[in-house]
Amino acid sequence: MKVAIIHYWLVSMRGGEAVLEELCRMYPEADVYTNVLDRSAISEVIREHDIHTTFIQKLPIAVKLYKAYLPLMPLALEQLDLTDYDLVISSESGPAKNVITAPHAVHVCYCHTPMRYIWDMRSNYSSHLGTAIRMAAAPVAHYVRICDALSAARVDRFIANSTFVAQRIKRYYGQESIVVPPPVNTNIDYLEREQEDFYLALGQLVRYKRFDLAIEAFNRMNKRLVVIGAGEEMTRLQKIAGPTISLLGWQPKEAISDLLARSRGLIFPGMEDFGIVPVEAMAAGKPVIAYGKGGVCDTIIDGVTGVLFHEQTSDSLVAAVKWFERNSHAFSRKTIMEQSSHFARANFRERMKAVIEETMDRTAQIRLSSRPHYLPAVAKQI
Figure 1 (cartoon, rainbow, N blue to C red):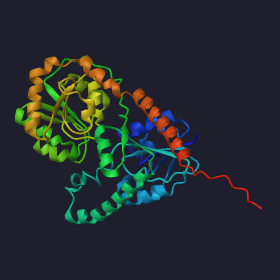
Figure 2 (figure 1 turned 120 degrees about the horizontal axis):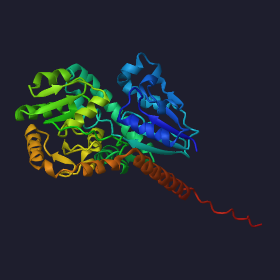
Figure 3 (figure 1 turned 135 degrees about the horizontal axis):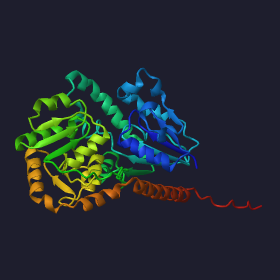
Figure 4 (figure 1 turned 90 degrees about the vertical axis):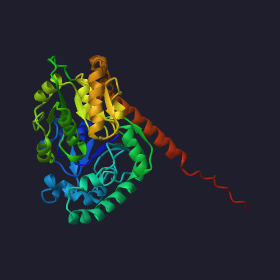
């Protein structure tokens, strides 16, 4: 069986690339296709595979300006020749499922999320742009939305990374999906550290992750909050941070582990499609106080492994922190760590293998049953 794995772009190692790594481990002989490749930015596991790029790779400064070429990516993916492959797995967060497969092939799409910047979160991504840029981008986004919706018909089975994403797939593609949570590194050593009176917030500093909400809440409570991460929001967050807020920028893994071990817990105020950071925090035995929408509803057990607040406001977050501190004695490190183990890498591979095999069997049966049946020729009477 020949296998092709399609990934939107390979310019960093984040959650989507962690999924790709596990797919590469599942199918060590698979070929990988992507729009743009920066070999220096990806793991050895992925580099061991034959990696092919679309014509986007040859465009000027594509590795850095790949987002500017988004309107060309559906066309670029359609130019790929996948006629020899029996199984095609698209890893979708940017354009990936637009590929055209052979009639005999099975196409499984692991959807991290329908592209947020052209669907329901387009306003979040464009709100800080100037009027002229927003007006110019609107027809481009409209075109990409059409391509994205039409390409959903080319997929034999959608796999969503969370219940939240499954709902978005149904809404925007009109397709049912099965949920397989992404792989998380849950083999995190619990560090024995004396707990200190501060909380940790961790992630890329972009607008939709709502670190401003956490800072506002902790300013009001006059409580210590340590924020780890870098990104476009850093300057704005520095301006609103009070004396109890520490913005440390990006930190190495060792420093993050140490701070997490000494903290009271993780603050997670944004809405994520899945949210790997909360699961990693739970793997380290730490409770998570999170906004109760999105992927965290699949991972955090409210009142057991963390606290969910249900309005994305500083008032709601303040109330959640105060409730947690009144009831912190009821949280068990062992229970929290056990919950994280459900999202281990081995579980991802096992679930994916089962879904892909079932999909291939089901698709084969459907195609056999839909073959035309011809009546035997009747001998001509003389």
